[in-house]
Amino acid sequence: MTIWPNIAIFLCLWHLKRAWQKQACIKIKDPTLHSNVLQELGNIVYDRGGPFRACVEMWAMNRLQCITGKYHVANVFWKYMEENWQHKIHMRVVRFRNLPYVGLDTNATIESYHGTLKA
Image (cartoon, rainbow, N blue to C red):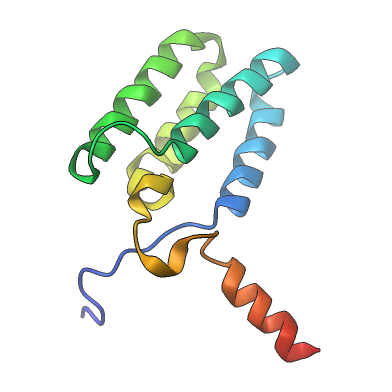
């Protein structure tokens, strides 16, 4: 049963980066490699230039493959990325967030409202 068809679902970037950092600490022992890999992934997530929305998923997958080849030493981390995050690329790349209510992170407005409500 489909309640809201064609509704875009976005992941909270704060939680996403936290999960990636946690797994990178576990799976990549070299601190320099660890920070380089996370920086490259952040560049994909936050990039706003490049192709139009229709081509973004293919662009992001190509960038991810380039980074995987560049940092092939971190193959355990790339296996984690492939299993858990590769199929959700449309939910985490900022360029997909061209809707008026997602200027900040998707949870920011809800968390702010909740804090105001509690106060």
